[in-house]
Length: 343
Image 1 (cartoon, rainbow, N blue to C red):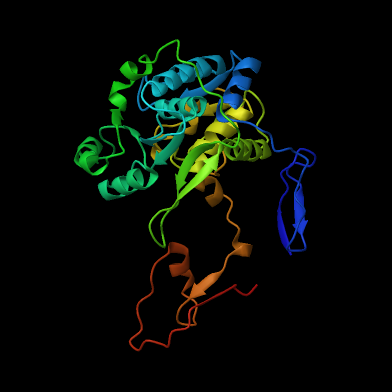
Image 2: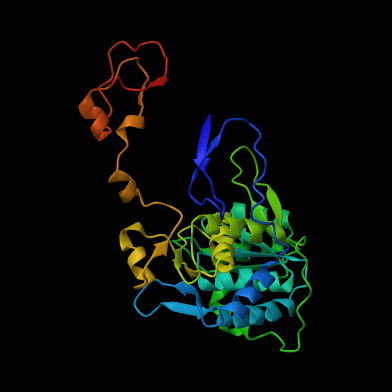
């Protein structure tokens, strides 16, 4: 028998006991025919002056924030700039950390009918080339350098190998790019069934696969997940997840937007810097990943197991400190197993 946490509007947080392998779908919350641009427009219409995005930045004076109304205005400008270079339906990649420009590109591509290809800023030159080639990306937005990786040099080295890649735009040129669109540029009609994102798998058993996600899927997924956390409109939602992953770009960005929450988006994950205090002086901050320090302060020894490879428990001192015991002179036959300690 399995037990999980029910996430619906009628009994949020109540345990749901699963006694059979097939459980009927929870239809208490409908799947809406929504798009990325549609969710943004609804938020801007309902809460134009509500804060929708906060970027704490990386240093003093680098904090930036946008209201929902400002987010829509900025995203529409980005969409027009994109359509001056690319056609609706084409694939455009973003290779950068969690900058606010990343989020504006996410929303702008949704309004422009372009397909976002999010890429891990930690990937190497060969991985970048594979993803751009396999996704048939016609455009790339990138940062020149990230954590010691010469990203601009790698992009330049790959250009001749990528005939589909028409434009590679450094985010250092963002201010020039965002005002390059024509005010007369019409934004296309986007359908909920249109592709919105190509998400690459981890590739642990082979080359990464590009999974095509449509607008209906990612907008509803983000809404369902963040709503299940009990996040209310106007509350701060801290998103520590990377934007190249669906946990960041779908659950974090689109989920917070659908729930009208203030998305607090750190540029990079810095556990030693204390991200939470940077959120501001709001009454509450919701975030989907419990801090390790919180888990360590409440150890659950009753559910812990002792793992042994020599059929004998390690000394208590070694278990507590995570130290390896001295190897035996005569190795015992292999027989790895995990067992619970006796009460």
